Image (cartoon, rainbow, N blue to C red; front, side, top):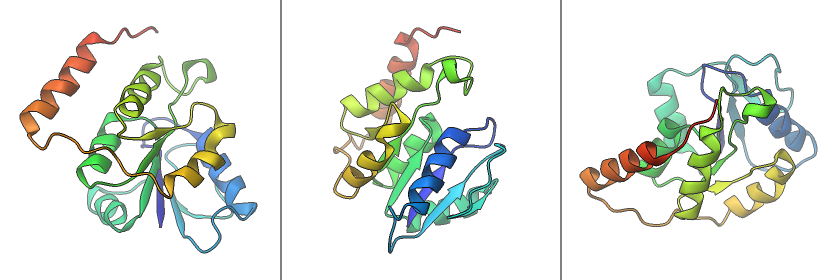
Length: 163
């Protein structure tokens, strides 16, 4: 199963709509796709979905998934990495009014450069990136939590956020 999650605070219909279109076109033949679509207005017609998941259900679905597709939210990325799940992120974009700034673009670029995630910066890349996700494995991380937290903190402190 592929778990698609967009969080619950902001709509991300661009990603949900494209996942649904790919499903309609037969991209996921033989594989279940489950979408947590958030507060967006688009309701998928070709995949199972829910608006929100509680923590226990999210953990259960993430654990049973073979891969996770998500916005480039730090919480979701960290959870996927902690479970060793291959992950494809699609950053929310300010110019598309999906977020107040482009911090998710910086997050996606950094984690992709470290070999931790795959990233699709344009929705037209989603199909090919999903195909690459089938064989993608996140690069090994330092197992010491204090170093991981220090690295994330350093990354956050050095980013310029433009609103």
